[in-house]
Length: 478
Image (tube, rainbow, N blue to C red; front, side, top):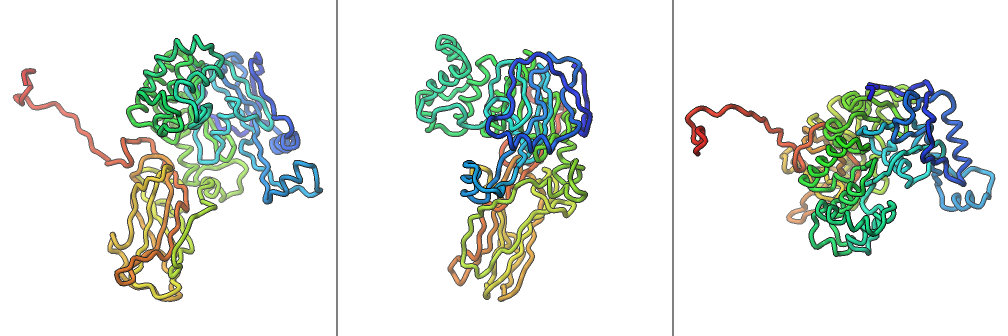
């Protein structure tokens, strides 16, 4: 396979028509959006190279996925019925003219910020979604783990779901029965396989789903972050299976926020941002470019100068914040800055960052306590602190006062997404009071190229040296 190296996609149309094995064009009934997509991407575009049309397992050409966003439900109804002269919607480009080619036998990673289109392109490749415009060609049997629950009936037990998935993939009952022992052995969920899958934990669910996916002899395996919910031992088992697949010449495509996994297993990486394919190349080159996107230092084509940082932040602000409290003190503003003092929603593991909040006092508040905490996506509180623990602020707050509070620390959490919560509390005599508490206000992405076991990195220093002679067991008899 020829090494194509770093390829920034800013021009030059090329492509490989080849034999058409399986093609999907834009979905029926959305030609108006398709036309808008075509207009938005007129001009030259890059596509898969022409040197070997039959070498590609997956080809995507000028792929758009455009959604209509309505401010009001009645605008949606009017649009569906063809009523009204005024356009009542905005167009959101989940994918904006994507061109990519994945060769047979490659292991390819797709990385990018939240909302960049990673899951959308995988769903289009697997046929779960239709593109608004463009075409996709897939050669080979696909097995996909896109999200927990996809392709499973919650009322069926594990074995019934194995047969359901096998049937949907074109296997006969006899073929599934022959593969069943291998599937159950790999899943290793014991007697739970006879229970309805709605009773499964997320870890058990992904065990069964992955066992089915890898044992139906796929030529192309697609995984979208599903393994992140499994335990570390099962993850190791799965990645060992990836290595076996690579040796067998299978094609693997996966999305992960774990950059260490991307670096270790991928031959090539595609970088997406806000529906645009920024580039493709070696894992190191694309991971470096991804880090620049996250901290607002990457030049994103089509953006006005100075907007890179805003674009890099993604959609990490929760529009439906849960809050409560007496409002004797009120959180007016909150944000996070990186070690360059730039506002961000992505933090590099090992770097320093600061949590900021601005608080206004509406009445006299004796000894207010300012706090923040991080939770994972499952709602488990991972870490946090407050000014009482840190012995940082013991004064009272007076009516009309506004305080800027900042917590600066080193990011030692593992790579992934975390939810930030904030609070202002205190004691009125012996009574604990909540003045203002905000839950899950920001979605923070921690970017890591080395994840250890558990929630955080102990930053161990490892030394391996020859044991001195004469110690017990040196002669092999200890």
